[in-house]
Length: 119
Image (cartoon, rainbow, N blue to C red; front, side, top):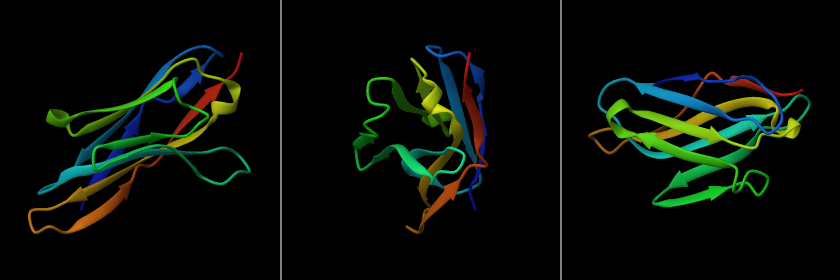
């Protein structure tokens, strides 16, 4: 079982930046896919970015502004968000695909972190 803990959300002014973190813990796992989703009030959860099999896909609304990265030593995935807009306001969730030494795959979700972009 992989546990994910998110951090880094908060209140930021339009044009500002935030970096979200998603730390994975557990035993016998490796990260083979990673992504971030968000859900704004009254809206469905939507994909922000996903990386799998060496390919990264960003939602059109965040291309050029958001960047996903990872620190393998820390089992942590990041989402750097620049030039934030009010419409980026949402709860952000990390979603990691992992595999254990037996080849079993699973997906885990973070608890969500609130990002509010407002002046």
